[in-house]
Length: 284
Image (cartoon, rainbow, N blue to C red):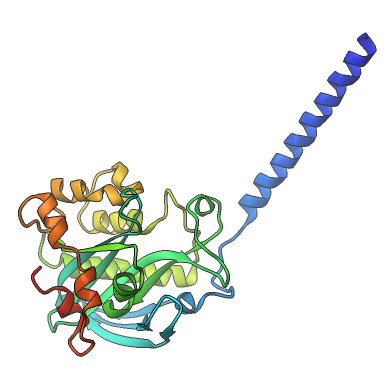
């Protein structure tokens, strides 16, 4: 009996050692993974934007301007745009609920409006490879690279409001305190975009997301503007934070503002002749 117990103890000890070795190997393999900009990307993540900045003058290249008929049917188009950082007049905040029954989960986007009426949006996302689908658990384990998708509003807002039938999308005008902060915010975004084109990063569901990056840019331009909060991790909960910190313009109560800010029906009824951005802002 004692001999059998000894054999069992040795076997369990060996199993524990082997398990620790395997776990160590998995951890080291995970740590050794490196992000890359050279993979077989899906078409809408195929190109990374870059910005040529000379003083206030900027040329942004590889802006996505797809015409989406559905999430699988689209015309591909990439454009360049010349802008002036000192001509940014407004910033808009987009909040997309993927499924209204799961209010914690949402995606956030900023859009920059110029004095001449042009608008340019940036959606911070996972950069998907061909055949790859996003899952938040996988997003914690170095499975996706991070990308700043610069796009026209009719592309990046249009695909959400016109092609995703379950999602609900809100559009708010941001409150930007301090003269020139709109331009500084845009410059902060563009410099990070350029950095990612040279030094790719892993997306992380907790620490490196759409909303966490927006908060970093806001606090870089206006230190302390957005405090640490659960709604940064779960951006679907952000409306209360937006109200408390005076981050977006409110019209009535928060419930009334949320209802008035929904743009899906307006986007669905877009006549395709008018400017998309002007169309979805009617009655805002």
